[in-house]
Image (cartoon, rainbow over all chains, first blue to last red; front, side, top):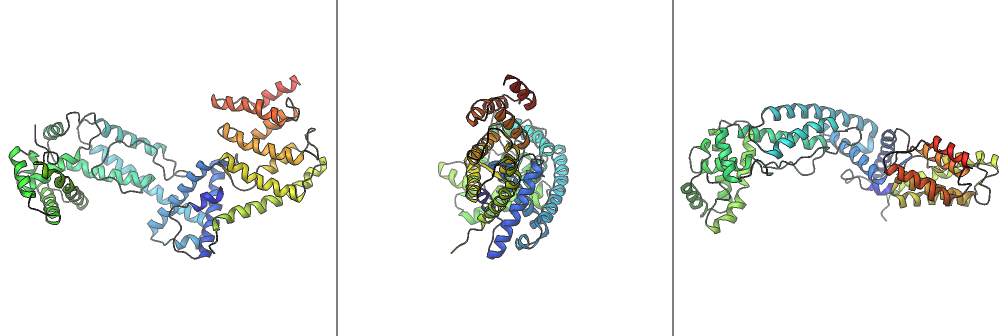
Length: 301
Length: 159
């Protein structure tokens, strides 16, 4: 049992020597024992395997975070006092939490005045994250519901406060982009995209980004977000002769033009729109043989 | 040959527990109870089996030492049934830790087990597990646990 847990140390083992592996295993086991004792406040000599696994994942998350932050190699785990590294890792988490709270305030302040249940619920739930997050014992968990899907999802494998901070960073980018357009135009586009945009789990940024990029491709006014039937036909003609590489380049360049027109100079926001634009290509490629790009660039209805 | 380092902590735990049980003999001998080396080895092995079967993991000293200290003065335990009783108590302990969702601390559960074992169960592990602990489990599932002392006072009066 014990060996099952310690051997599943998700990512801590590397190409280390046998002696180093052995040292890490023993120290990790001792640290887990200490964390378990603190968790049960010394009242239980044993815990369920599931609980021990969560405690171990939390310890690993914390140690990895410290290694990442300090730029140290994993070899350090074999040489240093893990209890000490764990404390330093907890310090890193506390710093990230403070940053997360700031990001949360910015995200709330910049939230668009567009009705969307999943968006509002998710923002509220993230507020609860900061109340429920038990970083001392379960630092890798995300104790809140996140329904709202970002246009570019959070990097796979992120856990705990790292996930929340990246999610909030992306929400802020999306909020800032949405704020460049008049609410009435945004609502009209969303209504054309999905008549129940208020109730369904849809991303607000995605259709706006697609239309902005489409209009930039046609050298039309980006702020209008309005793609007419004629514009749709022009886009089909534009993409039909293009292979993957020039098509993606055209989309990426259009994203940068759209940013310039919308006065978005922040590098992360530009990168975000560029990535969004380039990822339109597989959908364009799939839709072209069927005669239209209405499913990619949303025509106003 | 590749060496399984993950077994190292378990091996250390086993050695530690073996020594603890040897040391416990010095205490239990006052009540005419002592474990042979074979019995100690068997109990240690069964501890890990009980943990595996109940899906639990234990760090540091096992529960056996606490069970020995709590139960060795029981009038229902003698040299002949000592090892077997400890094995059954150990199994029951881990089982009911799970079944009560860890709402009772180790000491509280052992106290409840001991009072019932020496009281209404009259040394019957079967009675202990099938009635008293079963009742404890049901109470835990209904969201409350009776105060072990109150319950056992009543039980003692009944006996």
